[in-house]
Structures are given as structure tokens and as C-alpha cells.
Length: 75
Image 1: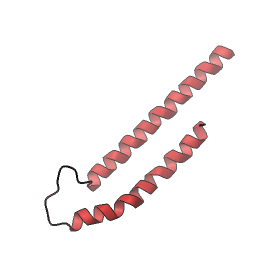
Image 2: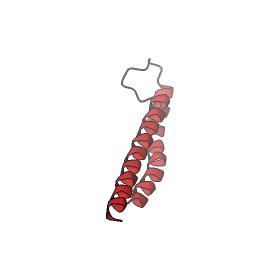
Image 3: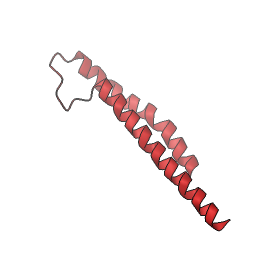
Image 4: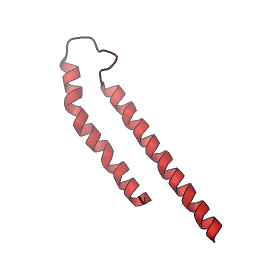
């Protein structure tokens, strides 16, 4: 998978996650019960999105580093 494909995926994933989580977040906000430890709140959702973006950055950085080392060794 090329870096261009990874960048495209990294840009398209957060809006998809937000669109999927919006009904769940609305359900949590209207629920009168206390929030359990396993409930996906908006704060937890955004921390999950940030973690996924960070992981994507690590993968892209690792691929870029591997590519630069390949060109350095072959050049």
C-alpha cells in the first residue's frame, strides 16, 4: 500500500467515525442513567480518534523511513 493510499484513508476515516458515532453520542446524552465504564462518550470518542490518527502517523512515518533507507542503500 502506497503512502498516498494511506493518506487518503487517514483523511477519510475520521468523518466516517464521527458519522457512525453521532447517533450513539446522542443516545448517551439523552440517557438519564449514569455513564458506565464501557459507554462510548464524546470525550472517549475523540480520544479514540486521536489515538487512531497517531497510529496512522506512526505507520506513515515508518513507511517513509523504510523507503528512505531503501533508496539510500540502493543509491
